[in-house]
Amino acid sequence: MSYILMTDSNSDIPYFIVDKHQIPVVFMPYTLDGVECFADLGRDPSIGKAFYDKMRAGALPITSLLPTPVYIDYFEPILKEQDLLFIAFSSQLSNTILNIYEAREELLKKYPERKFRVVDTMSISAAETLLVLRAHEMYAAGKTMDEIGDWVEENRFRAHAIITVDDLKYLKRGGRISGTAAALGTMLDLRPVLAIGKNGKIVPSEKVQGRKKALRVLADRTAELIENPEDQTLIIINADAQEDAERLQDLIKAKVPGIRDILIIPVGPVIGTHCGPGTVASCFLGKERPL
Image (cartoon, rainbow, N blue to C red; front, side):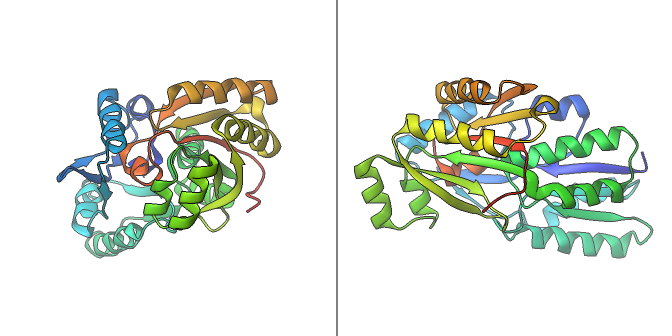
């Protein structure tokens, strides 16, 4: 191919898919106990387990933007030889895309003969992965950069993540809900159901009482919104909540019996910093986002 298809680790794309298809990835940073680390896409499961155990014990990891020079270091070796299509996580969840655009501008001055397209998926985690996987199918079939970029932009609002969290304090810390709402919700065992909205941000959908009901709502919303389940793999992500992920898998199979396949993967530490341990989500392609 005359160009390279690339993405970022905020897609939570599993390492075994990256290895199989040789998809280049920009790895995003997080800091835990004063040490900067980078997402490993689940390659070492013990890292994720230790990360969430530390969060449960009170650790407060933080995430940060990759600076423009680091993006240049990722992109320039490719642009020396080929054009580049970069599929990025939602611009509405971080300002890091501004550094991507700055890197692109600098590199195109240096390599004016190259083409470098950045596609904002308005998605994150496995919702982004689903778009990347469809894009790679087109890439392997010989589609052009613009054909793939246009398809992703036309279909990005069909990529869903229907989410529930286990502890409201992480949403409070990230400014998603107020301290009062978090305290009241904890007292009443209220579990928010969230989604990636049309604005590319995480938006509230509804509140339910109890974890089991929250998982049932995730299955219900999946059944309502999914399209052509027989032709797709649904992805369930979990932040050290494997049993609940498997329970959700059973609920979805009962609601959507014709689904081709379900893949369960971990939420990486970068995304997990903001949603907390115990987060579970159903990610799939379907109708346009309603919220």
